[in-house]
Length: 217
Image (cartoon, rainbow, N blue to C red):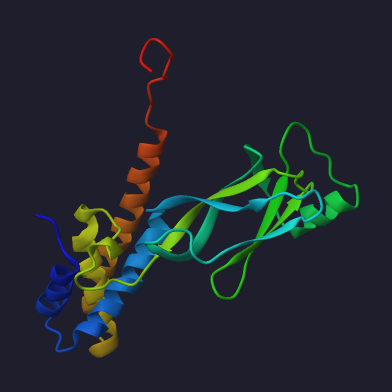
């Protein structure tokens, strides 16, 4: 049986014994889902950032990576012209511009800065060539949960119970001031964040069959 957003709201109110409105519970659940998505790297999205013009070295990752997501939480990998670039910091960019940084092989380095308003500014060295497509694999922050809109629930279904535990822990802390009761539920939630990240990492590392033209492709 698939859990709906309404099911999760009901579970938090019933199991937590809270006399609160639906909007409050949705806020607790939404914040907990965002935490699980980021810590577990639950949803990785490939987004287009821009195209090199041979002059500009600074680009901005915009707020809307996909319809089900509201912003970018983390940049995992950057590609320029199909080549994976290496993450660095702003001192690396400066060193490159001053001729103090040696690069070998294809690609380059990038430094990403998290701006106010959940956007990133990316500086690149060397400056991307004209026409080079700039793309990034990112972790997207989901929209707030909404009753009747099941696409807002983006975590795997077998982790919804841990999501409920996290929301109940929030209620116990904020409404009743009971960290002693919240602690076991916090532990369940935190362990779920670790487990979902481990599972997703395993799926990414799973061996895949090579596709050969005329044989299996």
